Every structure is written in C-alpha cells, then in structure tokens.
Image (cartoon, rainbow, N blue to C red; front, side, top):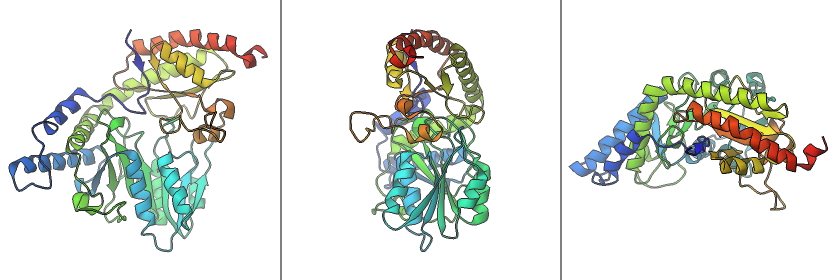
Amino acid sequence: MSPVYLDNIAGTKPDPRVAEAMIPFITEKYGNPSAHFYPLGRESYNAVTKARAQTADLINAKPENIIFTSCGTESNNMAIKGVLALSGSRKHAVITEIEHYSVQNPILKMASEGYSFTKLKVDKGGRISPESLEKAIRPDTAIVCVAHANPEIGVMQDIEAIGRICREKGVHFHVDAVASCGQTEVDAEKMNASSLSLSAQNFYGPRGAAALYLAPGVKIKPLFDGGFQEKGIRSGSENVAGIVGLGKAAEIAKAEMGVYAPKMAALRDKLIAGLKSQYDFLHITGDEKHRLPSHVSFWVEYIEGESLLMWYAQKGVYAASGSACSSNILADDEDELQASHVLTAVGVPTDVCAGSMTMTLSKYVEEADIDHVLKVTPEIVDKLCAMSPAFNRK
C-alpha cells in the first residue's frame, strides 16, 4: 500500500492542473510583469492580473485588495507590523493564547518597542468567547489578531462574531486564514476582516506563493523599501509562476470545495470515532464540532508521542507532532522538545505536548487510507504501552 500522507496542514500535494498552469511561466513565458510594454512581459503581467482576480474571488474580495506575498508568515508580519507602525498613540494589541508563531512573535517584538498586548485565554475546546474579546479591547487598541482555525488542533473560532465586535469598536481586525482558506468558506466581507492572510500550499497550490487581503481604505507601512510592485506595499520582482499557481489553486478551490470538503469531513469523523472506540485513554484534542473538515488531533496517555509519530511512519502513515513551525523547538535544556503553547492552553499534559499527534486529510485521502490508520493504531499503541513504565504502573 502507498504511504498515507496525513500532514496536509503543513502542505498539500499540488493539484496537477496547478502545476500545468505554472510550467509555461517557468519555461518560455519568463518575461518580467513590470515590462508589460512588450509581449513577453505583457504575458506575465496579464497572468498576475488574472491570478489576483482568482484569488480575490475565493475570499469574496476585489482584486485591487489582494497583495501577493511569499508565505503566510510574511502576510501576518506585514499586516501586524504595518498596522502598528501607523497606529499613532494606539499602541495596544489583542491576540489569543493559541495564535501561530508568525502572529505571536511580531507582537512580542513590538512589545519590546513600547507596545502592549493582551492574550485571550481559550476554553478546553480551544475557542475564545466574543465577550472576552469585547472586554479586552481598550481605547488604545490598534489591532486584534485571531486565526480563523488553529493548525495544531483544527479548532475554528466564531470569526464573524469577533469581526462584528472589532468593526463596532473601530479596531483593525486581522484574520490568519492560512489553515482554513481553501477547505472551508472564507469570506473577508462576512468576517469584517481588515486584513487576512492565506497561503497556496494549504489548498493544493505551490509553496512560496501567498497573499494578504487589505480591506478598502486600510493603510499599512511596508515591511521593506523598494520599487512599485504590489502598490509599493510588497516591493520586489513577482514570483510569476507561483502567483499563477496560487490563482489556479484558488479557482479550483472555489469551484470544487463544496465537493471535497464534505468528503474530508466524513472521513475525519470516521477517523475520530474509530480512534475513540479503540482506547478510553486516547483523547481527541479540541472542540469536535467547530473543527476544520480535514483535522484530527489526539494524544494517548502513558505514551511518549514522538514514539507514536515514528511508529506510524514505520507503518506508512505520515503525520505530524504539533505544528510544522513548533515541532522542532527545543526547551531550555536543549535536550527536550518544548511543550506546545497551543496544547498546554487546552489542557494537554505537558509531558505529552511535544508528541501529540496531528493527522490532517486532503481531497486525495480515501476511505481505505483511514481504514489503514485504524488498523495499525492498535498495533502501535499496544506495543508502546507494553514498553511504557507509566502504563505498567496503572
């Protein structure tokens, strides 16, 4: 049996139609889109313009409000640093305690430069209450940052309610939609998003191609200075092939998400139910109702989770332990992995946080793949329990 790839939150397999659309812009259509006064450059310019419209259509936005970037991290940094740099006397930010590092770390850096921030706590399911957000917003609050869905536990926030509060309070609302865009509805207008990040690699497009949505009238300071590309907000020669791939992936997601998302959700539910039925000491992480259609996160008592990861790989199941951006972070003694801030926030014991399992599906995953996971799980868990001193003392 072919390997079962269940690490799609870290990057999906590009759709063949995306690769097909990109190839001409890697080979013969190599013109610079800034040189659109001759045919070779104009081809690239027109391709970027088309991709901008395709990307905007995916999130119910206007093409002129899309800025192309290289990744979700760049988009998040661009929005946060760019807004705070122009915030004047408003030097306060609000985030949740489970935000991605590309949101937390820019906020922490700005805090060292005279800004302050409030971290909202989540419940055991990984969600914040809109009421707690409303209380946290102050007269000097410049920006609120809340991810639509968390990549480690797959839990989705009540983003529309959060957006309404920010709009009523007159505060910039940044939505990190990298984990959700392309597999569930992301509507920038319904969300009342002032800015929003998305990345092609999470919906069957290429790595190295992403976008930042800026609502009409929103101004930010550029991260770096250069030329006039992307309205001067993101200077530098465009990654034309990657942008074309992003646009094509967005077009496909818009047309086909209504088919593949329910399929993923059904397989997700089968996997969750199957795992829970096997052991009473296997725990699903995060809210099971408000969850990405592709996402399963769990931990097993008595077992060091990194061992689970390695044994699953031996059985042809490629999954993840924590998020792709946190799984290799070392603790202070540099011999142990640091507990994930997301998992500790939702109550996962710190001694297993570094190895909690994350399995994320894609449109390519079939029922036979889920059956294989459920078949090999008892073999793995029983073997590791037999080796576990903690289990043997039970």
